[in-house]
Every structure is written in structure tokens, then in C-alpha cells.
Image 1 (cartoon, rainbow, N blue to C red):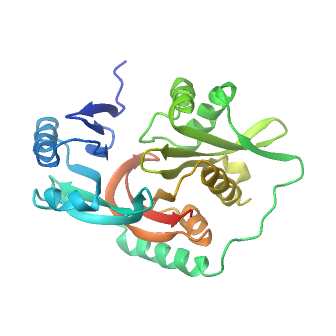
Image 2 (cartoon, one colour):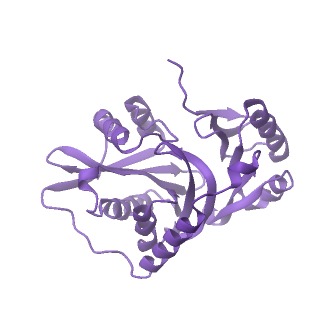
Length: 282
């Protein structure tokens, strides 16, 4: 059976993800790539595969090179690189339909709601009696992939694959979970860039029967404490724009809205817009 997932690879010294699932190229890390040459080569790759978007995370001082190649800024995260330099989240579209957002009014309402809730501060919640919040380990990989498979019909990274989870645990991702009666019911992860000292707070998922328990907020608070211990300076997330819960969770935890990535990511069965939220951890 052909694997339809997007692949991650080194491309002209940069780290990219690309493929038909999200129908895009995602420039994850520029590394020491020649920005102008990379912009040209990504355009060629997009055209040869029929991709309709390139999404690029780039340092602010190199953004003009991409903007000169037809990119536009969709979001910004201050202090993304070592707490000092901003990152711009840029987009280039190859099909005007990809830029059309059908739910923009609803999404704006969700952002406003999240910001208003954010002014109330962190919601005081405790773990239920008998529940345990802990870091996950490779022995959990099969149960974790099963939970993710139940929650997400599609996802931009293969978190429904236990081998992927176990491998990324050994590399740069720390996973956390809430366990009740020996069963994982809620998960999240910290994807660390140790060189740039930033961390993406991501992969939040709670089994349907346990939603409404504010488990994402409990996980997020614990994750932040662990990431401070790991010397991370800036935390951010790329959250589903149509999800009230996750946007409110980040706003209430003191995160600032940084912008929206239009029709960016295949998640929960279709390509959706994503909101960027960020917070300084130092």
C-alpha cells in the first residue's frame, strides 16, 4: 500500500516536509541554506508536484529574500531564535483558491473569544482523584498511537505510528500524558529546537469521553515547567483555528496571538487554517 503521508527530508541544506496530504511544502528549519537558492528550488519542487502552498518559518533578517520571491507574512513569533530574534511564518500560494478561507468570520470570533477568556487568566483545575500526569516513555508508544488514531482522522505527522513516536522520543520530542486507572486518556508533546531554544507545544489530544476536564491546560502548565528546566526560552503552538478549546487553553495560559496560517494543514480529515500563539518562558 502506497504511503500517502508527507515526508521530511533535508533539501538543499534546509529541513522540509512536503507531500500530497497537506498539498504543500513546509520549510521547518532554514539551517545554513542559501535562502535565495532555496526559495527558487522550493518553487521548482512545488511546481513539479502540483503543490498549492509553501509555508516557511524563517529568521526575520532573511524574510525579505522570501518576500521578494512572492511570499507574504502570515504570523510572527518574537524571540523565536535564542529568545532574541523573531521568526516570520511566511506563505506563498500557487493556487488562488488555497488563499480563500470559507470560515474566516467564525475563526475571528473564536480568536476574540479566546482573547477575552485569556484576560481571565489560568483556570484553576486539579487532576481528578487517581489520575496521574507524567512524561511518556517508549513503552507507551502503542497506546499513544491508538489514542491519536481515535482522535484525529488525519494528522500532518505520523503520530498514529508507534515506531514514529518511539523514534522521536529518542530525538527531540518529549511526550506527556494523563493516565487514569492505568490508561492514557490525554496526550501532548514538546517539540524542542535545542539550538534555537524554542519549543512547539503540540499534539494535544484527549479521548472524547474525557473532554471538558481541562486536561490540555493541566498538560500545558506542566510542559512549560519542564521546558524551562530544559532551557527553552520561547514556546509557541500552531493550533486548529476552528477549535474553541485549544485556542482558549493557550490564551488563558498567557500566550499571545501571532497570526493565522491560511488553509495550511491537513488535520482531522481536511486542510484547515491554523492559529499561531506564543509565550516567553524566561
